[in-house]
Image 1 (tube, rainbow, N blue to C red):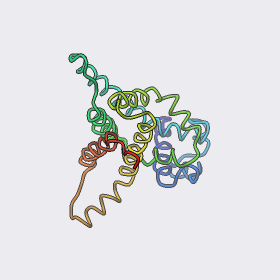
Image 2 (image 1 turned 90 degrees about the horizontal axis):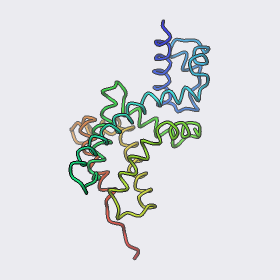
Image 3 (image 1 turned 180 degrees about the horizontal axis):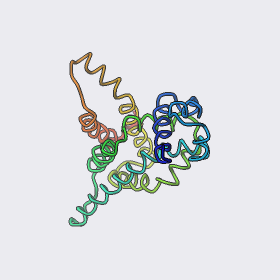
Image 4 (image 1 turned 135 degrees about the vertical axis):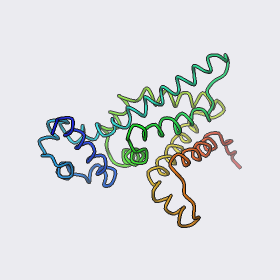
Length: 218
């Protein structure tokens, strides 16, 4: 077995187990047993469990942010031909859902699993992971969030902050629970929905969440 094969087997096993059980509940011995390698291989290739967790996220976040940045640049290049215009909320969400997330599947990465792992990153104490994501991918996040804020000048910063996280929370829940939700759809409505169709439905719902008029105090 080559070193690359060993690395990929460890990452594949860790990705599945982390998504199913969580970071703290998954031991390195469980990962190496599933991957069919010895414990020394994890220490050799990754150094620690924390670095293994970061490597699992890197496999998702690198193609995701690259696709998002490329799509934002493409849209901005189009707008450069129309001075005074800016990216709209719908355009930005299409870049997020229909290009970046859907693009993960083309790279062989499961967007649903990515959302599940991202949800765990928020709910489990993994400070090292947040620092890793901010240091490595923070520029892409700030670019997207900045463009979104520019497209919503009527929304004050605190309200925008919360709406952004409402949107992210809805996205994470909907996609990480997609299989269960889709099974209920089939049982209750006799209908099916692909991931692509769900992303298409999610974009306008997220846009409405971001652009809704602010409620006034009674």
